[in-house]
Length: 157
Length: 157
Image 1 (cartoon, chains in turn cyan, brown):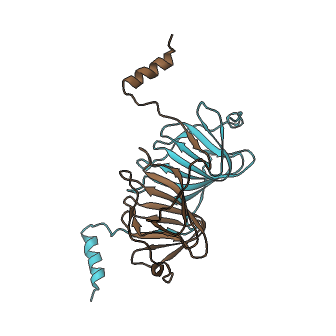
Image 2: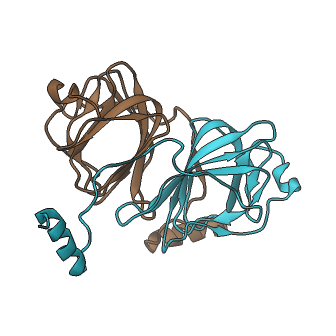
Image 3: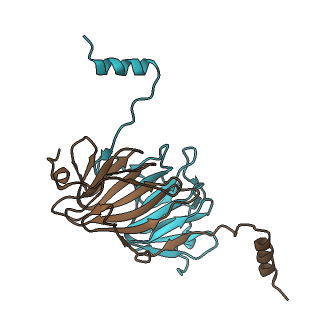
């Protein structure tokens, strides 16, 4: 004889009902595979470690991004903005038309929607930031041209 | 004679126009004042270090929360969910009706909306997590009763 719980599940599935909301979930350290930052969007060696995905209630995705010395993103904009929390090392960031600025462990960068910018490691140190990226229609970034060596080496503020 | 830029600003203000969107902002490490976790909502010594606020495009606030050994939140739910990234030490968390679970550096906890739970440090170690809290109508948490010593000391899974 079928157990009532199993029967209920089959009935719910047959009726097209959504499964019951799952409870608290723990993704263990190291259980989410990192990816290399694609060469089309990054200069140098960049590692992206996913932390969480956007869902119906939280409209950001989260990831640790580690840039080896000299590595940086291409120029880009975030349609829904981004927050960066530097967690290791020293990095650089620049908004289009403004000076390159240094960012250090503990700094929090707010990138409003639509602001063209780049970020990466300083020449001499690896830099890791936690990136919290606003997602709209599954998209968090619009990529543009690479950051040239001249732009990267420009005088810092 | 009034400079054109100033004149334009005054005209825009007089017309009630929003100021131009500000660009990339950097909040330097240590520039945002920490707060103690209020005794009504926490047991033991807890420090909350704000990182970013929710805005029109990103519906989460971010903070580092550090629990001294044995310290923990009260039971609570998040109306719009929460993500926790453990960044130091070993902690504990429990969903109502389920066993206490240990969380360690690098673990990511997903708390869906409406799930009653608590989190804090393990008995012997300080624990820090980055908390990314879904905000709806300016509210991110509904507080409930304290976690008793019996609940805190219950057998771990």
